[in-house]
Each structure stands twice: as C-alpha cells, then as structure tokens.
Amino acid sequence: MIVKEWAIVSKKVYWDRDVPLDRWCEKISAGHRSYLPDAVSTMKPAEFIRFYGRENFVQDWPAIRAKLPGESLQYAPMFDLAWSQAAGGGFNLRPAEDFYSIPEKRRAFLTEVARHPGVSIYAASKALGLQYRRSHDHATRLMAEGRIRAVEAVRNGRRALMLYPR
Image 1 (cartoon, helix red, strand yellow):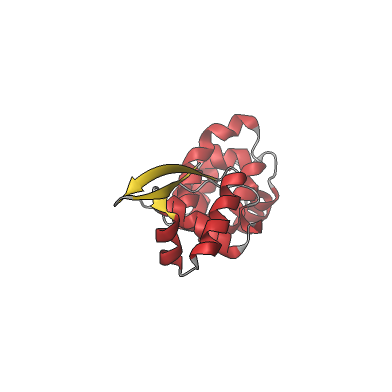
Image 2 (cartoon, rainbow, N blue to C red):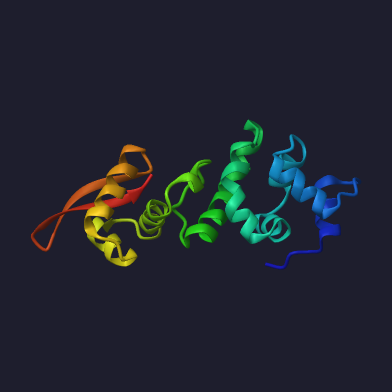
C-alpha cells in the first residue's frame, strides 16, 4: 500500500487544520479526545503506523486503544490486527492495556500461543527454549487471567493440552 505524505493525510483527517506531525504524535499518545478518534476513524492502519512510528505503535497501541471513546471502537479491530502482526507476528494477539506489564517470558509464551493456535505446552516450551515446568506455570497463569484457553486432546496416544488465545 502506498502511503501519501503527512500534509495530504492530515488534511484528509483534520480538513482545514494544519496539524504538525510531532504535535499529532504527542496528542495521539495522550489519547486526546478529538485527535485520536478522528485519526482512528479516518486513517488506514498503515498510514497511522507510518506516521506514529512502528516501534511507538507496537509499544503504545494497547494503552491508546483503552483511551478510545465508545463511538470509535468500531474502527479499532483493523488497528488491533495490525498491532498483533507487528507485536507478535500473527493475528490472534489481543492488545490489552497491561500487555507490557506481563513478565517478559510469560508475554513471549502468550505471543507463541497467539502465533501458533493449538500448540501444546511442550511445543511452546521447546520453541521458546524454556523448561517444561516454567511453561506449564506460564500457561496456568495465563489461563487463570483469561488470556488463553486450553482444550484437552490426545496426540500419539498421549494426553495434551492444546492452547488457544482468547
């Protein structure tokens, strides 16, 4: 997708207001009551990410999303998908406001489950280079928090929990 220059995109969003890019980024990160809803409802995710910055978007989107007013939430799913792809490499990761407060290895485990739905605890622990016991602890905690769900299955004659993101 070709993203136009800021001068063109900002006029599409804010009509006749001349909005400097650095000020826009500042207002978006603060969750400004007019800048944020207008940007999310009018811009495509690729435009938003380009001007806000990919790293900033990955880091800030869960908190920014929590600041969206109710009428703008209908536009959030496309941005959620873009965030999931940028943050976790798949489309099943949900942007929770406390995502970055999850301990790093548990967050990596959650991302692995989101990237590979139906993965077993053993397979996830192997992919991440974690001990099975630590992976089991992460899975149990994430299930208790409601971030993932488990379905019991039999594979190769052995019982296994298949993990799926919520």
